[in-house]
Length: 214
Image (tube, rainbow, N blue to C red; front, top):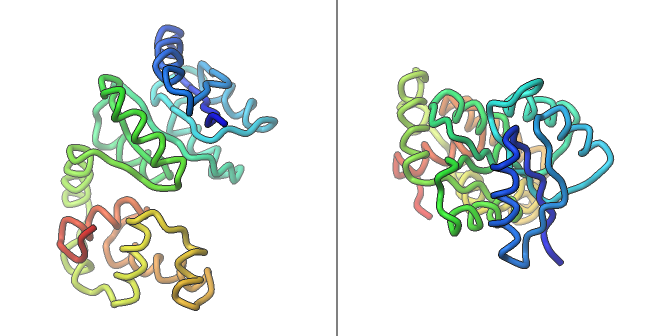
């Protein structure tokens, strides 16, 4: 059975192009298109998809606002940002809001498929140049970056490494023999120590600092 994809972009040609590309593979099916976030949310209130390709700059409701509304409504469908705008602040904000990937529209077909498949598995896949931009942005905007990275406990490092490998909180809790809320409490401590707001940022910092390796 094919994975259901929702494409959200204000340009008809882009939507049609993505549909043609995705449906060259049997594992993807574009089941709906939306020209802005408002229409996308209305669709998601009554329908379910496996993954969303989301543009950033659209009329009526842009991509970041759409992500915010999805969080407010507890819509936990994985989102890949696909945009022409290579702006660090937009990228970081999108990742902080829970996007599973960030791709420019000139990305390769194989990279698009790989990122979508990772998102559907619950993993976050960022290209090396995106991780570098993320790290540079966080270094310029975070004061406790260096000190926090050195103060992670063994449990926090274990949990963060498991997150980096795509495991979910409940799976980590089961393996460690602790409550899921305890895992989330450890993650909150990690965020505070590293001065970040998301799992993706925490993993990126830990990898760059050599706290663990995949």
